[in-house]
Image 1 (tube, rainbow, N blue to C red):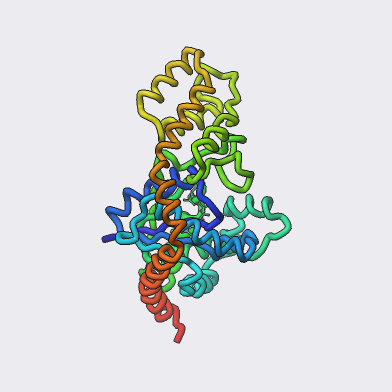
Image 2 (spheres, helix red, strand yellow):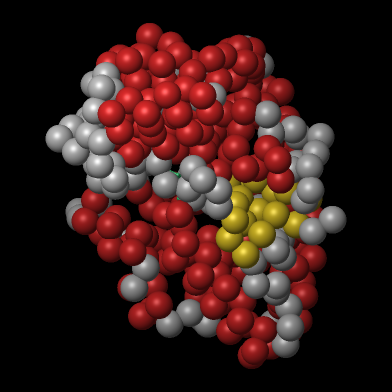
Length: 326
Ligand code: TYM
């Protein structure tokens, strides 16, 4: 079976952007690939998370993966910092990566603005460590959202550079993304949904039906263009969510009323809130169950990380021999 790597920065509860852009695809792909799903805590440190939050978030993220249906019998769940081979290989890749490549990465530019008081080396070096997360396991595919495109391209460039200097070692991984690759913020639909702007911008997987209803009710629809294409960003975002969470008939009904200019956004939002809530009903139950058994979740992470480490050690051994480290 070919290998797949993906994962997230543990930054608290996951939102529907994370779900639609990544996890939803993982659920299908875990049947076809040998999957390694990471909790990338060393990456999260670049944003200066407090120690307690960092610890708590790793467990929260693991619970979100499991409650979504990631099956630890089929897939490996690992914690990045528990497999120190990641940082070792990152140093080796650092010596192959021109600084100019990293300065060009759009997420570095964004994060330098967002964390203007803490533009640390880790922020710049972030994509090199991410290349390691993927190449250490010789993954051939990486299912992620659209915002990761530049990171995957850089991973491929690092693989090519290593292979041409030291001989064929790493496959060049392919990015996989689906129709939910870019979900926009509810409050500012010109930017992607993320947690950094505040809770009204996103719907968390674990939000209660009441909260989902409230957040959608205040979502921006920026009307004024009804009946025309392309739809304005807020309206287009609601339609994208209808496409991903509701029945085809429901979406078609609203498409018709949109084009006839009789659409009522309050009705669209109420319908969507119901469909999203029921989509995650099982998730909420499984999540509540897992919260009662954090030790079991930790066991899954320990076992998964130990398995990941056996793969990581073998790759690192091969790399060390090739680069000339005794
Ligand atoms: P992170 O933690 O920001 O996001 C996790 C995944 O969710 C996707 N995503 C979205 N998809 C659609 N719409 C959105 N609004 C949205 N927001 C987030 C992301 O594209 C991602 O797939 N650098 C990575 C973490 C990482 C990683 C890796 C991923 C570190 N090492 C190795 C894959 C393989 C990140 O910050 O994702």
